Amino acid sequence: GAVVSQHPSRVICKSGTSVKIECRSLDFQATTMFWYRQFPKQSLMLMATSNEGSKATYEQGVEKDKFLINHASLTLSTLTVTSAHPEDSSFYICSARWGQRYLFGPGTRLTVT
Amino acid sequence: QQQVKQSPQSLIVQKGGISIINCAYENTAFDYFPWYQQFPGKGPALLIAIRPDVSEKKEGRFTISFNKSAKQFSLHIMDSQPGDSATYFCAASNTGGGNKLTFGTGTQLKVEL
Image (cartoon, rainbow over all chains, first blue to last red; front, side, top):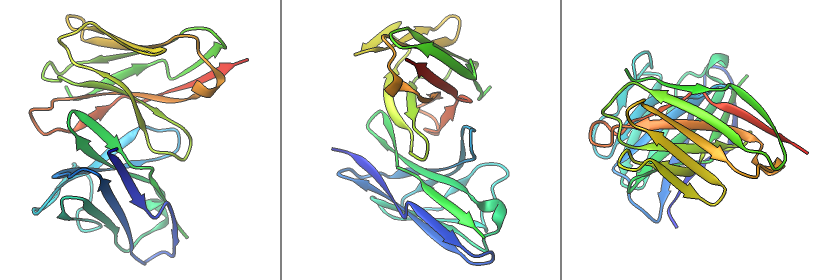
C-alpha cells in the first residue's frame, strides 16, 4: 500500500554542519510533498511545499536559505538543514498527498549539539 | 481565516467511555476534514476524514460529526481503550487551492483503566 518513508529516523549533528533528510513516497507518485516541523507537545507547523521539478514554496517566516528543499523526482523530496544550530533541533515530518488523503512519514528527530 | 481551533487541549476518559474532541474553522473554502492520531516519536496517522457533503462518517469506533452551518466538526471515539491514549489532531484543507493542510492545536487523550 501507499506509504511515506523518511530517512534517517534520528540524526545528531554538530552545530554549524548540514544535515539532509530524505522523504520518499512508496508505491505512489507525489508531485507535491510537504515538510513540517513539530516541537514537543505542539502541533505540526508547515514549513514548505515541495513541488517536483520546481522551486519549493516556503511559509512565512521560514528561511529558505537555511532549509533547502529539493524535489528531484516524483518519489523523493529532500530537506537539508544548513549550518544547523541547537535551535533547529526538532521533529521534522514530511507528507504527501495520495488521492484525497494526506499521508505522513514517521518523522526525523534532529538534535544539534 | 486559516485557523482551525481545537478543544479540549487534554482529555481523560475512563476505559469504555466516549472521547469527544471538537474543532471549528472559519474558511468556508475548506472541503476536506481529516483527523490524525499521533503517538510520541511517531508521525501522524490518518484515522478518518470527511467532506462537507455528509454530516456524519463512521469507521469502527471512530465517528466524525460535521456541522457545515456552524463550521464545526468533532471526533467521537466510542468504547475508548488505553491503546487510544495519544495526541489527536483535526485538520482542514481546501483541496482545490494550494492543497495545504491546516492543523488544529491537538488534544492529548489519556484513557484510564
